[in-house]
Amino acid sequence: ILYNGEKIRIRSPSDAVKYKISLLPEDLINEGVLEAFTVSKNISLANLREISPMKFIDYSKEHDAANKFLKKYVIRASSIYEATRNLSAGNKQKVNISKWMFSDSSILIMDDPTQSLDISSKVEIYNFMTKFTAEGGSILFISSDFNELLGMCDRILVLKSGTIKTVFQRSEFSEKELVKALSQ
Image (tube, rainbow, N blue to C red; front, side, top):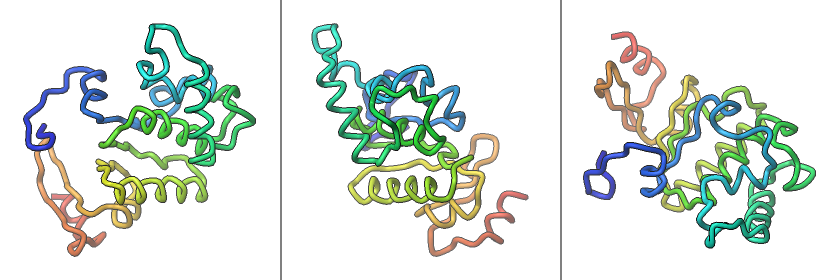
């Protein structure tokens, strides 16, 4: 992987966090959030150094961060103390996004982030993605939905056996050409 022109190796999640690279996995429930944890605990998970500088959790820092993201991303929860399992899929995804934004991520790998979400939640995620990239962040967006890819991406890469097979620039996007590249 080249990161800002430097070759890096990522061998663990902590290596990725060090380089401000975060993964929003396809399986949100089993890999993205801890449903038994509160909204606050989920948001602080990826940035424990920030909230526990002396090896003890500074609950005021944790609560301040959680309240900030609850408002920023309009997470519909009764409070930061609500168990994440009680939230809708869209709000769970916003908690997951908040976790990585609290850790100051600059590169997001988003694997089918709108899967199983209602239309309004999808729009909120798309708006987040647009704003994040406009502010200088980068997103590696993986989606099984052609319309999402065509609507959200600046460039689409078709991979086969781990090798880039085709690269489409936005001006070259078409569902027909994408299907053709995938079927070869």
